[in-house]
Structure formats: structure tokens, C-alpha cells
Length: 254
Length: 230
Image 1 (spheres, each protein chain N blue to C red):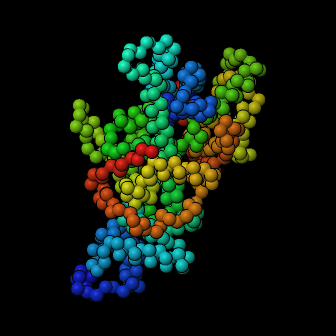
Image 2: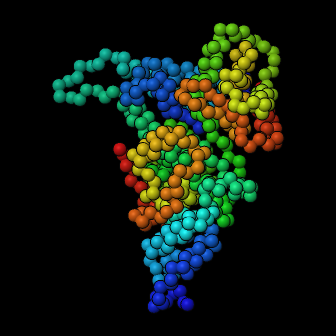
Image 3: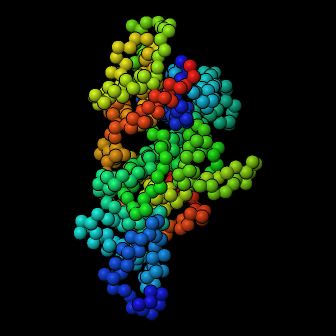
């Protein structure tokens, strides 16, 4: 499986940590390092399996987490008289997370304003801007979390696959779009129905990521960790856009 | 009537409103209040603001499709937000919305400017190359100089299009970080999404208390707004 979803750098290690903290309902001021580190590494592993291009920053953070965990496991040294007790090794990371969280809030506010302002038109309108990569309407890690659940559920009946079949992300992409045209919204889990091999599941997930990334559909989650619903795009996708998508994913060297 | 002569009696309101409307119609960029005041010759920028309120009042009364919005250091005539779906039938392409990464990067730059690429990357924990390039291309950020340290890295700041894109009057119009939290709590309570039309049109009535814009020309380096830590 060498098809790589080009995600650029939408999400980084801090995003993943914030996602884990939310998913586990942790208090960012008192993060249980062992649990977080373990889950963080699991996500990295899954991302590598999906060939999502794990950037170096993720690995640096992994090393940082492991290092912090080990520091917290060491017995505390006797603090000499009059000296400050050693700082909680998590402090610096927590500060970074809080700061980043703050800016995420600002970004959300900016998004709302952008939408409001976009409803106004002026003479001599805005310059035409070329296709800009659409946002993954739902965060990558929310999608990964949902996919993990699908994988775990399938584990029970999954056939160990060494299949010769060329599993084509492009074809799956078309299949998904067809289904969406017939029925929208579709539940995320419904997209994987009937698929039994791990490779099939992965192909479906990658096809969905491509669809979302190109704005050919959008995904929403009513509540945290709830079912994700995939919606057909409001404007029917131009055939050229769909063709281009299929062509681009299929041309990835295999 | 010579508009430059300060001796002339003040233009009567109806006439002044008409002139203001004509100026705004022709302008294809936000028109600074000072410039309008200069054109009138007999009114201060604050008095021009009063005229704008009067004009907006008339528009509302007539259920006009237009509004005057104060933003990016000046005034612009825009269509009413609730008419967007009609205007879109003219097939006017709108710039695509910004990605989350772009918005977050912009947020960091807006509140912390001027800063280097490395400093931006420090906050988000990811490489900012692609995003910075996109933002530069869309004229939302600009290069404001270089940091006087080893390597003399480039410093970034917001550009004037940033203000227009988000409907800010000027950099001091950016909400304080505490206000952001309140705003988000509010909109979550309303179950609002980014696609909901604005609930109020506060943005159209000029704010009497707003300070003079810090940025009047895109070429001037703005003072960074003080990020209020709460």
C-alpha cells in the first residue's frame, strides 16, 4: 500500500495530543502521561500503516512524551534544603497545549467571521482565486479515531489478507460518490459494510479522506465520539473534478 | 460650489448623504474616513461617521439591499448579507474558505505580529511553509521586515486584505482573547455553524468609540495589538 494521502501539514502532534485529551476527557492540567503516550504511539502506528506521511514533528513529540514519562517514573530526589522542588516535566508541554488551544479558539472565531463577511458583496468583487484545498471539515484525528473503531470491530471476523487483488482507491472513491448521490447522508460505518479484509477497509478510508479533502463531500459529527455522517456536497461535483481525483489517486506508484 | 473652500456653508444633510453615497458607489476599496472628510471640506471624520449612520438608517428604513460597512480602515458599500443567495446567482466566484491550518496560522500572526516562521511553527508544532505561502499569495499576510538576529529571518504580519476578509475595522478591532471564549460559548449555545447568516448587523453601524485605525495604508507597519492574556 503505497498510495499516500497528501495531507500537507493540517494537523500536527499538538493537534493529536489535544484530540487524545478530549477523547479521553482528560484534564489538560493533569495529563496521565502513560495513557496518553501509549495512545499517541498507537495513532502514529496507524498513520504509518495508512501511509499518511508522519512528519518528523510527530516522532519528536513521541520521543518527548516517552522522555517525560520516564522522568515522572523516577523516584524523586531528595530536595536539598531551601531549593525549589523539581518542576513537573509536563509543565512546558501543558503550556504549549494551552496556548495552542487558545489560538484554535481564535481560528474558530475567524472562521465564523469569514463566513459572515463572505455573505457581503461589493462592486469590483474579489479577485478570482484558484482552487484552494478544502478543509477536512472534521479533524483528521476524529476520522482516525472512528476508523480505529471500525478496524477493532472488524478484527473479530477479519480474514488475514494476502490478496493479489489490486485494491484501487480511485474505484472505491467513485463507488462512495455513487452511493452518496443515491443517499445522503451516509453513516461513516455504513461505508465499510461488507468489507472484511484490513486492506479493503484501509482503501475505503483513504478514498473517503480524498473525497473530503477535495470537498466532494463533507463529514460531520453531531456529538463528540458520536456517529460520523458523510454528506454529499451541496453543489454536485463537476465530472472533471471527480475524474481528476480518480486519475490522481490511481496514478500513485504502486 | 467649491468643496475645497472652508468658508462655504456646510452642505445640507440630504445633499451630503447623496455625495457620500456616490463616493462609496464608485470606490472599489474601503474609503478612509479622512479622505471622505477631505473631499467634503466642511466635515470632520467623526461627522462623516454620523453621515454614515444616517445613510444606513435610510437604507434600513427603505429595506434597501445595500449597507455601508466600516472595515479595513475605511467604508465600503456592500450588499445585505441575507441577500447572498440571490447575488450568488450572478455566478460571482467567491474565494474558497480558508483551511483550519491557515486560520490557525493567521490567528497566531494576527495576535503576535511581527513574528518569524519559526515562531509560528513553535505554536502549532508543525511546519508552516505551505500555509505561509498560501497566505502570502492571497495577500492576507505580508513580509514586514527581518528580525535583527542571526540569519536575519523574515518577519510576517497581517496585510490589509486580512482586515477586509474578516470584516475587521482595524487591528484593534480584533477581539481580546477573553472575548473569543465568550463568543464561542455563545455560538455553541445557539448551535451555530459557520454557515449560519449573521444574527445581528452590528458590523454595519459604525462604532463611535472605535479608535482611529492603526493601519491606514498597507505599507505602514502596524503596532501589534496587545494580546490580552486572561
